[in-house]
Image (cartoon, rainbow, N blue to C red):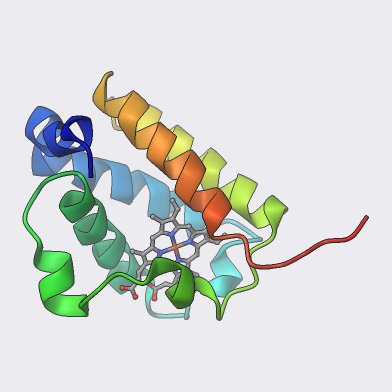
Length: 129
Ligand code: HEM
């Protein structure tokens, strides 16, 4: 993690992560591509895991790893079929949630750069033309 990542949590605080994740999962809840990937009654639990993960990644308390161990994000996403289209929908919702949460630069830019890179890394299907 770089110094700029470290400062994100200090810049925006825990409430901003809560606003971000609330807005993101509200969108996932009605999304025809993403919603079916999440276990029926697990959205709240999934939202909490993502919030704690991001807080830890961006320099806040390490509650995520205390509860879940090493993130192993790519391995944990292998059970879901993530193609380019699913990745793009995920990104659209996250970008809209960043706007709605009114997270300002430079935190917004650092988070967006991370999401773009990490979401692409989660693609686990090959789609021949
Ligand atoms: C920046 C990219 C991403 C990050 C940082 C991220 C992060 C996470 C985290 C932290 C979890 C919980 C892992 C755990 O069990 O502890 C999770 C679960 C999950 N993610 Fe992602 N994810 C990303 C991209 C995606 C994409 C692109 C999709 C699908 C299009 C996706 C679908 C899911 C699903 C279905 C789960 C399972 C719900 C759960 O049990 O938590 N994720 N993700």
